[in-house]
Image (cartoon, rainbow, N blue to C red; front, side, top):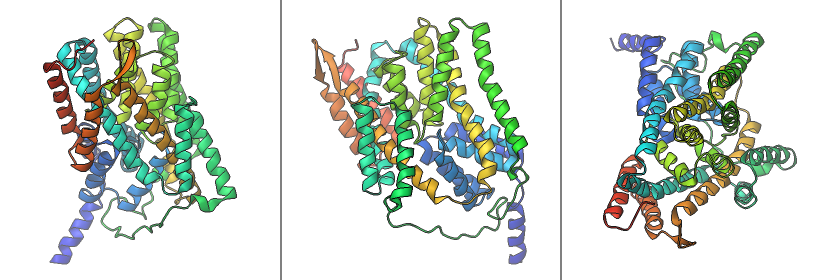
Length: 452
């Protein structure tokens, strides 16, 4: 009797999930995917691998390893990859789009509220409390990523060097990434021992039975085809070009929209290491050079991005909103179009990377050379995130007053308190954001903070 029950369970687990069932999971994930990439990947693993047994652990990790190599949000790309494994191209598109769609509408609503009511004193006070908490969140991301990425002396040297280059010498982020790749390739040839990780762990062998897709499964869509790749590249190129034609025909100042599209296309292609890595590049260009928004608004955008589900890279959509809003003299319509255009060009390459690359990856094994190169790139990204921490910290703690810079002691203290609360006391990020907003309101009511 027990054997019969086990057989029935295995047969059920091996069944392909219906597209409808998968659709509602991806939709739900789009609304509950808080906690950054680690939390989002954890939710996917618990449901797809542990609960539903749609994909085995080895196939899940194989897909994740590939997504970690790509620029862009790895959790969104992993969802696209898993959706593609289950239901082909339509499954990948559905999973990837639904992963970000809820956050697009939530962030749009928050952006409209921000520019409409942000000048009201009590609303400004809420953001006054949020800003130091955001600096603390970035600092904790630096600690978390640094622990994983900096595993030998070379990694520490490259992290420090990348910080010096971007902070003191204003070297663009893409050049730093390119330089890191060049260094990694040279080290592989000249001194490969320097790229070895401490302690190497062997992957545990697990039971692959009972999964719809396991290590032995070969799916029809995983067969590589130049014809299919050519078609996908042509479609992607067409999708990239069409908006430029629409800008020219339908919108005023088409050069602004072209610049916006080109900038966020470039940003999408260099976002190795996630949102915290690309934000310094965006701030460097969008704030300092193009003046689409100021550094305080950039921090506010990060605060809004942290409170919404979906990938943190959605902060770029806020930048696009502010760019359109400010460029067209406070137009909510242009801000909305700016957010839509930014989202479109930020995520278009993500789908291309998965739909073109996944069939190739499914036929390959782990490549130690690629992993070594990635470790060097990640080390350089740590230095870039340090730059972001310092950049935001300066903007929040050093405030202009009486013709000189003055230290905002509340902001400085709240950064320290926030780090202790979230790192030592393990207070959740979302609850602490709420506490920080209330702290800013209290400081306003006490007369310490007066909005400009």
